[in-house]
Image (cartoon, rainbow, N blue to C red; front, side, top):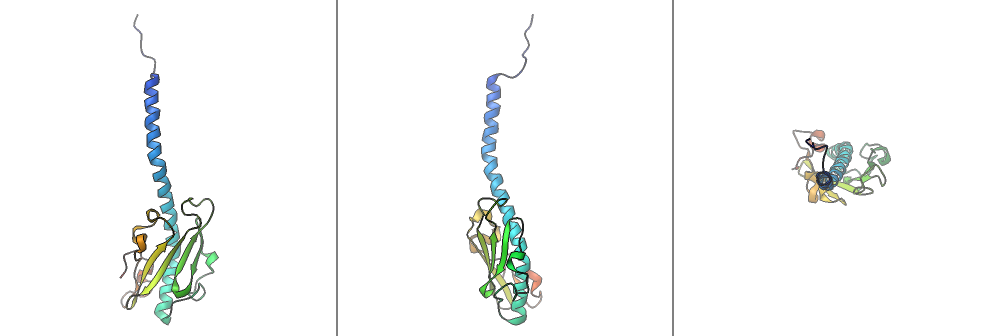
Length: 169
């Protein structure tokens, strides 16, 4: 009489479990970084309207707004999202994005800030990004204090590049 194999041996099952463990050890941190970057992108999307408002205020008055009201925006607390506590315009038109300090925000970004500072670039506005976040969570155009999109200019108007995320100039 022949004996047939009825299933997997214990060693085969242990090898499969070890492989799954190794894959999980790599995938979970990568996924956490991915979710944090997605949450930061929500913040920059919320700030897009403020960037346009700051650039338009500067184009029309020649002065940087000093608060949300001067820029024609709602109160800072009214500009919020799932992961963003508020978007505030401060002195010299600097936009400060503050993340909520609780779940569901990723632990790496809780309570942190991103600042977008406008600069007069001879008829247009360029944006410099600074943040308390690790660079790996920021978009490429915001890493290491890189410039954001250009706004204004003779041909484009204030809203043209204010919401853009290019290298500015």
